[in-house]
Image (cartoon, rainbow, N blue to C red; front, side, top):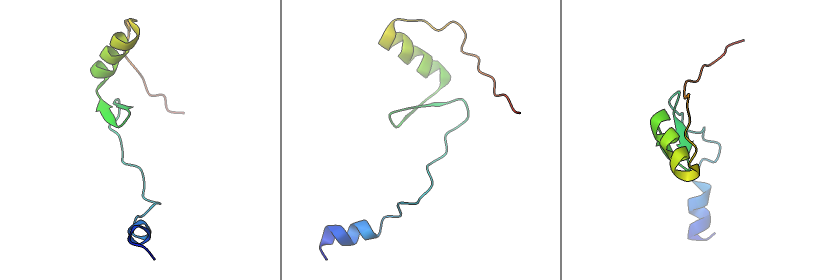
Length: 59
């Protein structure tokens, strides 16, 4: 067995994904607030978002 195989065997691949705060957005591993996400959309597309209010609906 090589060193890389030994190291791979120690990684827990069934580890749960990290949690994300409610209302925040994951942009390729960077956590963005709603304001930062809105600004990112404006910067990338030139489209300004008018209403950034989101509601969570429970059944």
